Image (cartoon, rainbow, N blue to C red; front, side):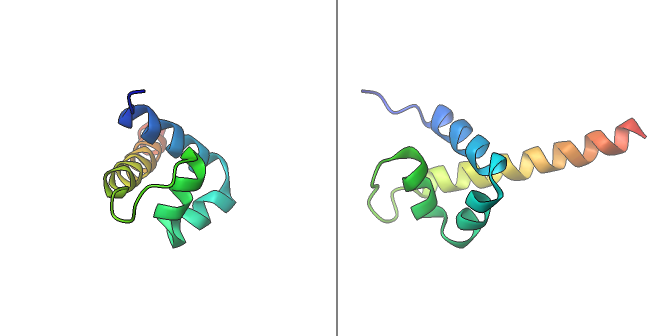
Length: 73
C-alpha cells in the first residue's frame, strides 16, 4: 500500500479546520494529533514532514481567506 502524502495532508487539514477542538489539540501536540487522525503510530520525528505540510496548508488557506475578503471589498 502506497502512502499518499498529499492526500494525507489534505485530509488532515480538512479535519483540523472543521473541528476547533482538533485545531486546539494540533496546536498543543501536532505529532500525536496527526497520528490520531491518520490512525498510524509514527515513530517520533518521522511525522515532521506531515506536520510542516499541514501547518503550511493551514497558513496558506488562512492567508487566502484574508486576501479573498480584502479583494471582495
